[in-house]
Image (cartoon, rainbow, N blue to C red; front, side):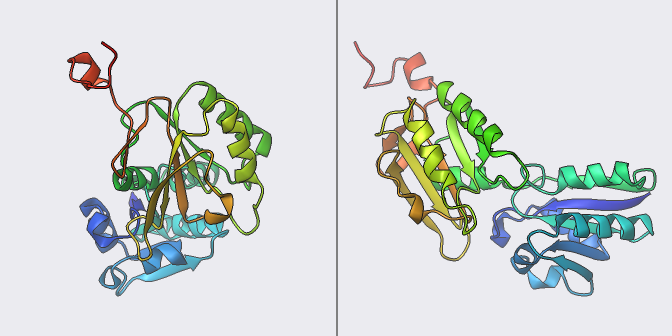
Length: 256
């Protein structure tokens, strides 16, 4: 069987490119990907490769083309930013492979990587130390009423909430609506971590509150981390305690 790697490239910094991803790219004859993510790869990894490049909405075309080349016997990689298994290309590759009958001759391997949520969390401190939920606000593939319902349930369950794709030029009102929803169950002083371009040129990291966050300052390159009831601002960092300090009697803020 011919290998087809679905390669997670992380947030874009070469230091966070997994060694397994480097190995897969080096062994591939063909590399398929969205132009922005290909541009973030070290140039040496693309030398001598056949490149299948498409735009943002070309996911089906590039995954199909990659499967065809692998089915024809050429080791191939599909590049996916962040972690390919989290809002990435892994699911689509598997769906197409089984739908089109490629799975009997193509060996698919998903290479894990640093996701956008873990990159954002690391820059903010430790906001995901307890239960959290992730929701994409893009309604290009998911109906908006489903997105609203998921956000509402996460808020009522007091999860830390990570918002992917919060706002774009074509989606101006959705984030404002979500903030309104969240304020029904979370106080205005709830801390919100705002991370833009994590581990890339132009990186921005700041902490605001649910009451002060201006949707106009957020775009598609931003990940939002909205705290739970227990999330704290410690200095310039966000931390959601797991409970160790309280368990061992070390929490100075605990009531006596």
